[in-house]
Amino acid sequence: MTTRTWLVALVLFCVSMAAVSPLQAAERVVVGSKRFTESYILGEVITQTARQAGAQAEHRQGMGNGAVVLEALKTGSIDVYPEYLGTIEAEILKLPPGSPPELIRERLRTMGLAFGVPLGFSNSYALATTGAVARDQGLRTITDLRGQPQLRVAVSQEFLGREDGWPGLAHRYKLPQRPTAIDHGLAYAALETGRIDVTDIYTTDARIADLGLLTLEDDARYFPRYDAVLLYRADFPAKAPLAWKRIAALEGTIDVTRMIAMNADAELRGQTFAAIAANFLQGHVAPAASAAAARPSVLAATFGGDFWRLTGEHLFLVAVSVLIALLIGVPLGMIAAVREVAGHGILGFVGVLQTVPSLALLAALIPLLGRIGTVPAIVALSLYALLPIVRNTAVGIMQVPKGTTQAARALGMTAGQTMKLVQLPLALPVIVAGVKTAAVMTVGTATIAAFIGAGGYGERIAQGLALNDGVTLLAGAIPSAALALVVQAVFELIERWSRRT
Image (cartoon, rainbow, N blue to C red; front, side):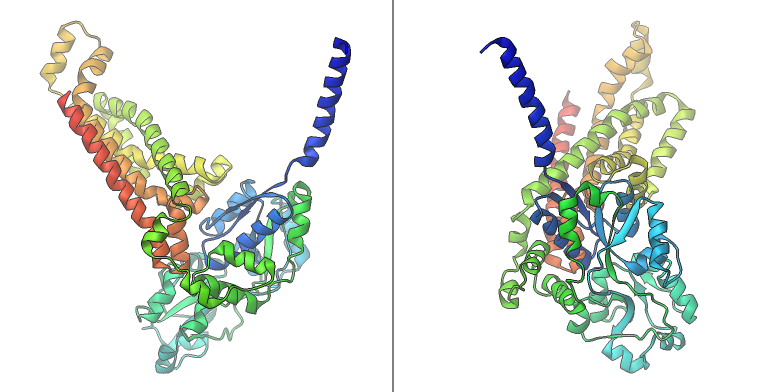
């Protein structure tokens, strides 16, 4: 065969492969979920459904509150997540309850979003109390709270600030209570032990019946309908048509009884979200007895399953963040040490960064960087790690005796040479101590990164809070604490070495 023939055959092969490869490439779907049990489960159902259609589907679990997940959707970091019609109306679009679906779709279209696939059940907000408190205080409706200002009310952080949450509810009913914030997963334990009297609930929560709680009647009809739907990017059906066709078939397949049962599988019987979703898609429910027997010990939960993946993710977040903070912080500390006015400004700036709430900073970085996950998490962690590095670098350099510095200059060294060869080496032990502090702090702070899909031990902590499951929570907290101790020990060895050199 001639060279020309070979070239023609090669060109034809490349053209045919280019034409075929798009057809063979698997669709990619990224599913998000909020940080409560039902959202975890529905997110896993959507993810596994997309995989059944041959898509490469990823589930970004427990991404904080609605604002974080919505920003991730708008920036394209996720394609779809389970949401509720009342939340879309009141919280996202600021529309009155009962707005026409056409108006909702039009408003979402301007944001590049769409909603659809009603799953078949409604999960409304409500207020609940224990049977004992209801009997003692004569509570049956939300209006009855008006005459009981002494009742201890604690509601979830999101409900406390939502447009359709406590502010509007208190205004409608003229409620005198001043609620405190509590994590939704911890509210049931607080009710059960009598630490609070009233909290907000989701009407499909499994623990309502388990604890014998009384749901107060919404006699003023304040809460809108919260039909479960999917909120997705408008281009998602065209981007992944096969996966979308399979996902759209979920419409009307989950009634309220089945959703309560699936929540109970997670919260009361210790089933994993993945197993619950698989059981639903296979059309059966795992036996309660075997589920309860399968609950692992703290030791088994800590080192089982995804331990090494989470460890790798956590170490990566910490190492990269501290390295970036070191590269930025040491030069800033050097400037702060030699320039007094600039030093006050630098130290003040990095000090203010420490006061910004971590979740608020992470949420602000999502639209700024246009993504969720590792990148905004590393940026936030690097900013938080700056203060001890900058401060210790400045202090270490300023503690170098002036006579030593003057002697170096007398020998003909420039200011740069003096800093590099004299001041920095003498300040090294103090600088290392600052890096140690930053690293240990970052190990703990990195658990927050799981709320924007960056992984790490925070995934287990978030799940444990959502399920009020102490075993899962400890399975994330214990290795995080152990890693902090290991990091501290390593840096103490480095600090000792630096003092000897």
